[in-house]
Length: 309
View (cartoon, one colour):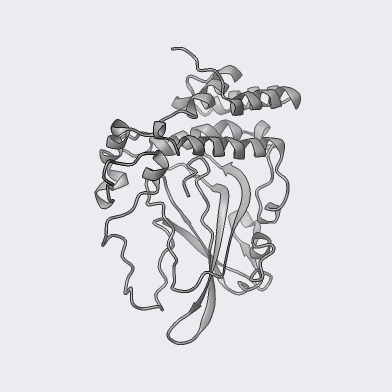
């Protein structure tokens, strides 16, 4: 099989490796990653193999199997080598109070790579009738619940942001403003109290501070004493955001974060994954029929290699 010439984004990574003495870091990361015996790494045995692989990924038309885990595992595989100790130390720390900090060179490259892949998913080369058909034969995607546009989707991003059919995903008691609904079609991961300093003791005891996340917002301190919740959207899920309560959007902004994916090499399909990408922040002041006012904050984290939000 002929090897495609490296795209500029891949060539840039190789140049960065040489300029910053990262060659040993990446060679060690490849060796460490392969010790997990992940079958999809069988064709990656050295640095050239790795660079060729991430270059080909830039042209991959997403397609699925019956289990619905191909796209998910592709995302995990890409990041698995970057998650190793010798490469993760080259990346920015992922915490809310770091959102306004300049990214490290490698973390910035990862964001640029994600954007480059997202640009491909905006082209007609990213999808065809055969790949669309694989999703219809993958039960986890529940494609019977989605509208199929006349002439089909023209890009993978169009497909990924597909619309559900009328009557699907209806909220309970839609005329009752007291009912809070899920902001996304997702798996509920838990909820935690926000203390009087806006801290949420969330992942591994690390405090996530709402004020740090909302730097520059006049509403940053309005969530003290509230509740923080987290839910995870898998690649099989409906990827459109909905307001959890009726109200008026008073502020919206994009918080540029680092591309980040934490992968465990478990042999089961249910690998732990944590996503950090471009965050869109929306604040909804809610005035319901009882004339009580409040704020809800919705911060969807984009799937950083599926840049369709």
